[in-house]
Amino acid sequence: MKLLQARFIRIVALFFLASVFSITYAGARNYQSNLDDSLLLKRFQKISTSLTCICGCNLVLHTCNMDPCEGWAIRGAIDGLLLDGKNNKFIIEGFVYGFGDMVDTHTAFKLVQPGGRYEFLNADFKKGYGPMVRAITDVYHYEIVLAIIALILLGSALMFIKSRFREVTVSEKTEKQKISSETDELYNKLYDDE
Image (cartoon, rainbow, N blue to C red; front, top):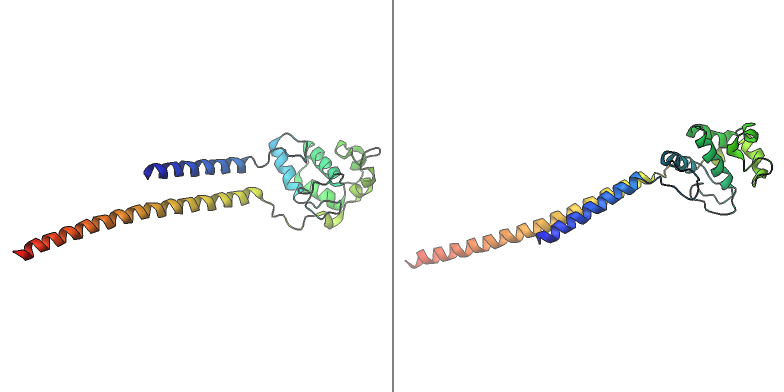
């Protein structure tokens, strides 16, 4: 029984470590970005979950995987602006209020510049999409959700172990009480006979 408990504890510990590892590296490279730096990828994820895709699907930019999709122009611009060192607020506000003439000169906007695949979006990038491009909510915190799930699973595993240990302890106590009561009966019987 103790061997099973030890194995179970090891399995739970390995699962917990795997959960922590996946939470730590949740910003790993994805198909929506050409960035290699994990910090920039996390920022890309944060920005793309704060914006709504402009293709008409009404999805958060980070979850839209349609192709062709005008959202790819936004993703390309986010990549370029992050590589240029722009902060998250600048990028998000740029899509809301517009980037102005920067669109015609900055390499981040090569997809919407004349001759680019999404040239027809040039004017929209300059003037901005207004508040409609903001995602309805910014509650896409995958790391927090994964951490909560890991804690719930860990708590469940510990409760299971505790209940198993309690069953063993209770059955041992019951056995000792049985032996004790049998001994008391024999003792009482012995002295009652005298």
